[in-house]
Image 1 (cartoon, rainbow, N blue to C red):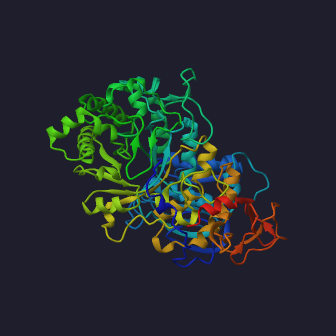
Image 2: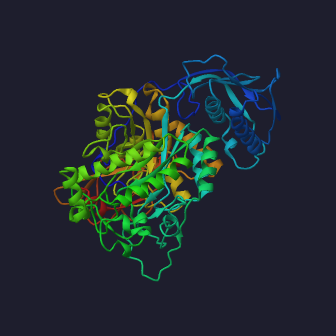
Image 3: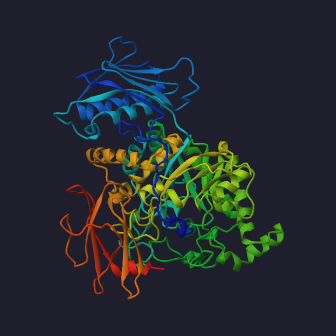
Amino acid sequence: MKKIFLLLACCSLHFLSFGQAPANNLGIIPEPVKVTKKVGSFTLPKIVILEAASQPEVTPVIAYLKSKLSTAAGTAVAVKSVAPSASIKFVLNKKNDPLIGAEGYSLSVTAKKVTIRANEAAGLFYGVQTFMQLLPKEIESKEYTKGIKWTAPCVDITDYPRFAWRGLMFDVARHFFTKPEVKQYIDAMVKYKLNLLHLHLTDDEGWRVEIKSLPRLTTVGAYNVKKVGQFGTFTAPAADEPRTYGGFYTQEDIKELVQYAKDRFVNILPEIDVPGHSLAAVVAYPDLSCTPGADKYVVNSGEPFMNWNGPHNTAIVDNTLCPANENVYAFLDKVVTEVAQLFPFPYIHMGGDECAKNFWEQSEAIKALMAKENLKTQQEVQAYFEKRLEKIVESKGKKFMGWDEILEGGLGPNAAVMSWRGIKGGIEAAKMGHDVVMSPTTFAYLDYMQSDVNETKVYAKLRLSKAYEFEPVPDSVDAKLIKGGQANLWTEQVYNIRQAEYMTWPRGMAIAESVWSPKDKKNWNYFFGKVEKQFGRFDEAEIKYAPSAYDPSFSATRNADGTLKVTVTNEVAGLDTYYSFDNSFPDNFYPKYTTPIDAPKDATTLRVITYRGKTPIGRMVSLPLVDLGKKVK
């Protein structure tokens, strides 16, 4: 988890309202480029005739459509290469339409036919995603649903993405997620036209990808002691506690996941996080460390091993690879060789973040390296490491990418930068002519709490409306160098796939719209109306999501007598908030919040609930006043 720039993540919210909200909210996320709503509707027949040319690249799109329609609607799909009476038609343009590009599409829904046109199969796939969102929410059900009128409104849509890189990062290292769970995560992201899954495969808590030439990475490095509670505060495991919690993906698993993603027009970006965040690798092969005694280290299970306070991270145990050790580069050559063969995506992400250097400062080998290479600082030591690593990656035919710390000490000639500590690193890299992907904590960190309360305790907050403010291209850089953006889900506090879903959605929708839709189409109130429609689809799909947008935010000041004056702010327009201080549970017959309220002198708890009209819509929120008081400056 990225610990820096907490203050940026906790900035006060403001509400977006740019662009003009369309009169007819079809509920499509991300918002298409152009929508023309027409009179009438299309009704799915019992047997759908799909006209589609028998081209191999279209096969997965056909399979996807058949599966969706047959599962929920019980509709059979007959595929024909020529069918004048077709009810759905796929058309790959013989002449390229430059407006829509490789992933764009045009969708025409009339009373008699649905037609999706695209330059490439990816565009057909995204056209299908939009068509699914025009059908009733029950289309997302995992079983046949009776009694539904399967209609879609007549509409003409022209649509294409703003960015080619539209990603989610899924940390499968801190807690292991199974192959079916990763597929489940992919299935959810493609509904919103996200096309890049960044798998964080290695960290201090586990090494998750089989490297056949280095078997101890997974026989030893993939397992720790199971702990439940507040990650990062656990007691150190006893020597006799079983180290059986975790797992890894075999190379066959990886190949299966890559193909599964490819069939849904998703690329997988592998991340091997070095030289920091490498405790699992060091435990497997202690000679990779600069520090004597590394052979006594164990894979971290959530017990404290880093000091995150102060301007620089310091390690309690040395979780870094040693830049002065030639064995490290031989090790990395083996790792990158096998990873490059498994993942066809052009980039390999090699981490580079949060590398504690206090053990390097004590290392005689590092001191000798600095003298030999004329390196003045530890940042230059890491830059030396990164540049050698970049050459290894490029020798395998891949492009090198790292977190923005790789800028420190000097950037390699061809490195691409993923900017997480705000957008500053991305701006710096772009001004140097390097490719950039924006994933700033400020807008895109999905491990952060989604409201002040009712959330797993994390050190920072990111509300849905703040995520929706994400703009990948700063004014001061060449837009061509910004490849796109992504949201990152770190999983220290995420133990299972249900919680991963809860943390991702609906904030993942906000990021999806920010990287697909035209900038001037964004409108917060309109967007949240669409989100609410998507909630019903998630219910049908049995995917968990966070209702946190309905929870208020709280701030306070001190009155002269020491009591608190509390301000309550709703993220969603049109809600009423009712409250109590007497330890009872308020409903809409309790006092309604209208202006900042004074907490009674001896009160201990503020409880609130939000309503839309006479219907409770938010969760019951219980906020200890002592906690609120701690936030008063």
